[in-house]
Length: 419
Image (cartoon, rainbow, N blue to C red):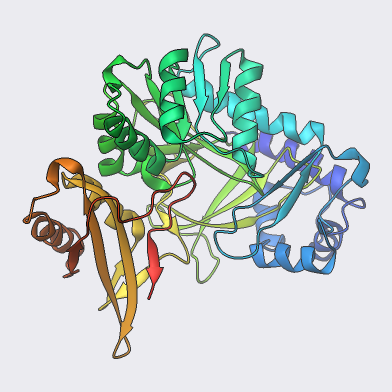
């Protein structure tokens, strides 16, 4: 994305919020930034970060929606809130204009996923207040797809609706795609008789993790996994690369993206892991400027991708979150690395990681639930321990638990717990 185009959109955004948005006007003024900002670099150098803590504090001080509203409340027609991954949920309002901007970003997601107006999309969500469900549904309807809501249904009922309606696309989290396939086996539903050709996943890093992606595609014969990511407070951010599985492209016509060192806040060196920082260029009603997302990414060097895109490429998609990493005996352990191992070893239906502190040292213990075909496989724990040791250079004890013991998740999975 050319900086000149982004700069024009940034100037237009600042002109709309400066003097009107109580949250950002003083921040822009103190930074010496207005609609005449000279360049993207000048904006980055002068504008301070916005953090989730800033937003939570603002909403606490100005309930119920905070002061990050550019227009009078009557201009807003959409409400959503975050999933509270790292604390108190945040509430977010959108105008029709901002909502349509987010739908246009979803258009890009669908286009690169090869989804067309003749597709029938099943949305395996309980439609709560989270942004992604509603924007995905509205954008698909606007595209002309048959949109099939799956809220308020048990997994068995969802599967039968998908079968009866001949749904061609499934939208859900990676964890739920695996669970839905598991439920199909229990209900004796032959997945080869289903018409699903694409599974669009989000909400967790799994869609870009090789082991998880391969596991889902194995469970859903003939279906291709397509990753995507976004946030309620930011909107739809990236699309899965059609040429390179495991790569996400930032929609740079809609976002200014940066990757910074999580500790120093300085730009991360090319090819190194860092925190994704985003400035949305079209959500003027509730904008975010230089927002520290907490997502860990690794940006590839700028170049034209094999798919023809020049948008920033994130190798491995979202690698984790800044607050997810656990240091065990001097080794940095990320949930995504454990997920890849667990999905790469045949026979695991579900798992749970327990974090404990023993004699001032952090330790991990893992419970693994075998799938029905491996219920009597006593060697599974040993194979998992070996795979984890090979991947992480750590010994992590694995305990097998009875089938059906561990929780299943429709939303973001919460597999890492402190004990």
